[in-house]
Structure formats: C-alpha cells, structure tokens
Figure: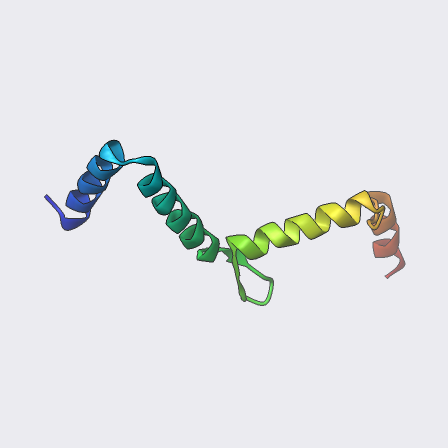
Length: 82
C-alpha cells in the first residue's frame, strides 16, 4: 500500500472520529490551501489563484450590475471598423 493511500485512510479515520472543533480546523486549513492553488493563467502566463479568480469574478459581476459592459453587437461593429 502506498504512503499516500495510508495517509488518506488515516485522515478518513480522523474525520470520522473528530469533534466539531477539529473539523472546523481542518476545513479552514483546506479552504486556505485551496485559495492559494493555481486556478488558471492570465493571457501573459501569470498564474491566478482561486482567491484572485473569485475577486475578478466579483468585480466583473459588479461592473455588469453597474451597466459597464459592451454587447456582442457593439463589439462586432468595432471589429468591422478595424
């Protein structure tokens, strides 16, 4: 059995036997780890974390709500003018 598989089995046992405070700690650690993972890349190759991607999505949603966007028709018109 691989070391990784042994660790996973041990963690499953810990979770099954854990109290609420332990679960909250593990959950917080996982969330922090996940936020720091690379979710994708900018066009120039710069990595984007999940936290940065969420922030970009929140900003984009706010721009849309404020009416700051271009329709497909507007973009097509601009493209033809080039």
